[in-house]
Structure formats: structure tokens, C-alpha cells
Length: 438
Image 1 (cartoon, helix red, strand yellow):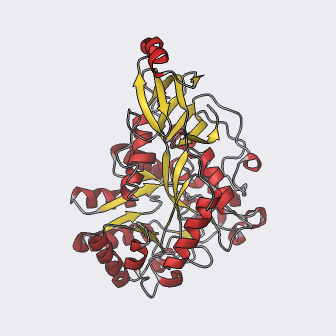
Image 2 (cartoon, helix red, strand yellow):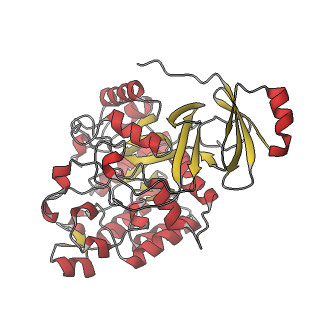
């Protein structure tokens, strides 16, 4: 394990805007927020607190740092696509303090030994906190449940076969029963193979325009409905990964109205991109689940605003250039997302050009902390006494997005050449800068 830096300085950051609201001065003492003051009180703070350093925040927005429940770090087994080190560097650049690393690596994270390996490698690589996700079934084979209790004892709080749906309802029931007993979360990749089949692109316009195999919305909504009923019966927490359709939103909304233990996430790209882009058959838009219709995108945005969808998960899925530069049918599913998440979500959820930074905080910090059981972050805010684990956001664009210039090892961003405001100026974890500088 590497030596982990500990913040020791007393830092005053002037003229920042917590949650995008009124300007304030932020005093950080070591790893904690020591105070959030009206700037008119700055002379008294300077005299009494005697900060080691004073930094002009120039109106930067400050929020609790983000948490991503859905990241593919690819290592072990896929270091040609991403490594733990490059993936966590991308996370820090995206404003994330915590990421949950999906289990579909090689070998699969389905044992205590694999969890320990992942945790140790991540601690040695970065200050970004990495939470290994345990698979639901051994080897992602969908036939035998992993020893969930053993992995919970090893610190795992989220389980998923992401990349594959657990089609066997009996196994889902067993997993949710164990989740209820142990207070952890089961995250399902909701795509029934019997319905989704060999789908390549959204059914309807995109499939007709390209001649590619159609991917119906029913494959997603049907399994969500099935699993929500099982969650209601067992009491286990079901988390629905990467919701993509209006019909799925309606199922989740009804489950929540009934008080069932169901939560859901949406990716940044499903909040902005439509199947009209996919219909160009450019492989950079090939993703699982597929890009859907403009109506689906609108439904997802509305559901995120009203709380039906709890959180944003990037589903950061890096690939080699070769894997995305072939024909559509041969190309890999997946997009990178960690470094563009904030700007895409802010743009997609803004109303009349105004971003609701409280909504961003709820979707990218509060809800994932609760769902993933990140106890140190569950109640964290920008207030005195809380950890100085913060993201500072610049509202001004920094230029067009360039995949080759990002920290991730891959360049398969669907936003190449796009210019958006709201870039990450700095990310702090317990007072230590892991990206940018103040």
C-alpha cells in the first residue's frame, strides 16, 4: 500500500459559490471544512483563523465530490483498454471521489481474494476511493450465486453481473434475500436475453434506417418489472442499472409509488444522445443499452428531475481504438464517461439555461452515497465539520472535448469535438487535491 497524503494546511478559498448559490469564503483545515462564511467577514477570518494560504475562487461552484456507482476499470484482464491507475485519474478529473468498479473483469470479482486484490491495487494507484463490486453469480455465468455473505464481510456493498442480465428469477430472489439480510444492494443489468436477443440498435427508426438487428424496449422494462416484484417480496434493495426508456421509467415510478425497495440510475449519454445519432451507424454511438428515441430521452430527464431516477452512473466503458473503429456489428459496446459526466448532465438537466446544482448534488453525490452505502459521504454537505471532499466547477468552457487528451487510456468518447461549459477546476479528497489546483 502506498503512503496516502494527509492534508495539513489551513486554506481559505474566497468567493466560491456553494451549490451555485450566494458567494462565500470556504475555510479548510486539514481534511475538514472549518467554516463557510459570508465574504464580508473575511477580515475577521483572516485575523483569527490565520490561514496558511488564501486562494481566490473566482466564483467557482463548489459541491460535495461525486460518487459513481457504475465504472469499468477493465483491470485485471483488460489493461489494453484501461488500467486502475488511468481510470482513477479520469475519475479525479471528472470530480469523483468514489467509484464502484464493476465485476466483469478477468478474473471476475467473485471472491474475497479478488476483492482484496482490487482494493489493494486501487489504494496503491490513487486517492480516489475504489469500491469493488462483487458479481452476483460465479464467473458471471448466471447459474450459481457467489458467497455473498463472505464478500459483505470483506466490505462489498454492491453486487452486479453488469454486462449480463441475471435471467434466472430464482437466483435474483436468492440474491435479493441475502441483500435484505445484510443491508446491501443488488444492481441488475436489465436486459432479458429472450427479448433483447441479438439486438444491435434501438427498434424503430434506427433499426429500419440501418438494417441492423432491432433491440426492443420490452427487453429492459419486462425484467425491471419482474425484479421489482421480487424485491417487494424479499425486501432486498434492487438497483436498476442504466435505465434507457420511457416504459422502464413508468415501471420504476410505479414500484416506488408502492413503496418497493427499488432505485435506478441513468447514464449521462442516455440523457443527451438519441437513436438518430446511432442511425448514422458510427460505432462511437454503439452502447448497451442502445441510444433510444428523443421521447425516451425526455422521459429520462423528467424522471431524474422528479426523483424517479435516483442517480447518474457513467457506465464508463473504455475500449481500444481498434475495437471501436471497425464496422458497427463488430464494434464493442460502450462509451467513456467519467471526464464528461458533469458537463453533459448539467447541460441535459438545465432549464432555460439554468442548472439546478442541488439536483446535480442529489444525483451525483447524495443518492449514490446512500445506494452504495458510502457511510462517510451519506450526510456530507458543504458545511462546517464535514470532510473537505469537494469538487470545484468552472462555468466557462475550456474548449472542445478531445478523447486523446483525456486521462482515461481510451478515446471512445461520443462527445468528440463538442464544447460544453461546466468543467472541473479541482477535486479534493479529505483536503488533498487529486485533480487541478487551488
